[in-house]
Image 1: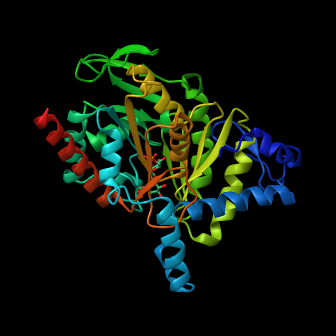
Image 2: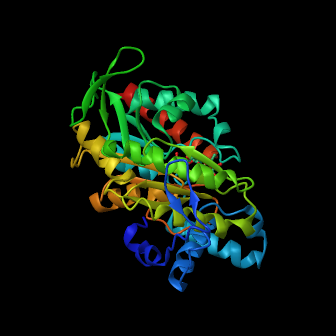
Image 3: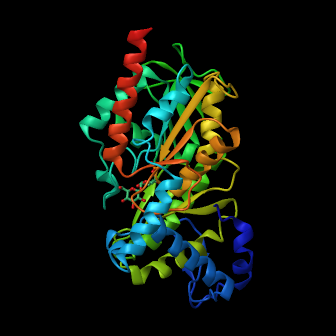
Length: 367
Ligand SMILES: O=P(O)(O)OC[C@H]1O[C@H](O[C@H]2O[C@H](CO)[C@@H](O)[C@H](O)[C@H]2O)[C@H](O)[C@@H](O)[C@@H]1O
């Protein structure tokens, strides 16, 4: 769910920038934390973010607390509703057989394990090799919250389509049997290959730079907090911040956001993300890519989306709406999801991708 300016309307009225407590940021914006008097509603909003961030990335210890029988029972009920894609692999390929499979993969927590330092979220060589083989079998896209160029640096496979900034920065080959054909400007990549570039939030570039400067100042003052500029989205990381400081940091971010009514906040795994308040998300990126590949709305196409986070839910919803394809949530814990199936962690994702490649190779050799 995206929280937009509407949710914050009450807060704007409570902002009183007094000269005594006023803070002027390097970007020239002035605001005062002391002058911000949160109402019950606003506190609810901040607490809501904090709770949702915790729920997105639950610490293992939390699941060791409480009655282990209850926990096991809850998980058992959940896995019955969202069976492992490894357990139901034969049923999946039975449905996909004869159709064009298209693969959509999230990056963090799906292809790479979640780690404390976002700069160190590298993908294993085994995963890279599996994704390379996968892309030789099926059109394959990575849809990530990361800066597109950064996710490319992690993955380093030019044959894929990349959608960075939660789908707001899409690039893919313009040539070949699966060259992108839909709207978007033609460009040339670092190696001189023709590519299609589609950036629905292009007009927000300078606003994103400004909000980054403001948030950077806030983050600097909080022990363990990190900030990442993902071009059309900005991540404020809470993972290494003491939990008792979370509400304060979330509140500071929310106050700063009042000066950027064209932006909104979403939350992920111990992260708050600032992004343009436009009707574009990972689900829209999936639709765009299917359309650009000439594969949209076709009964003989079977899209598979694998992701671990709240922002991936938008893509799962699109697959549900289209009533075809398969959404797979990566999670070791019970989570509310629109995905039909599940995998526990990136090591199971790797196994699933390898099995899919072997199945496709066997299909091709028996044709
Ligand atoms: O859409 P994704 O590819 O899953 O990207 C979402 C965010 O992922 C990264 O943050 C998450 O992974 C980090 C590294 O494991 C972890 O430290 C952090 O707590 C997670 O939220 C990335 O750093 C963000 O910029 C992405 O938006």
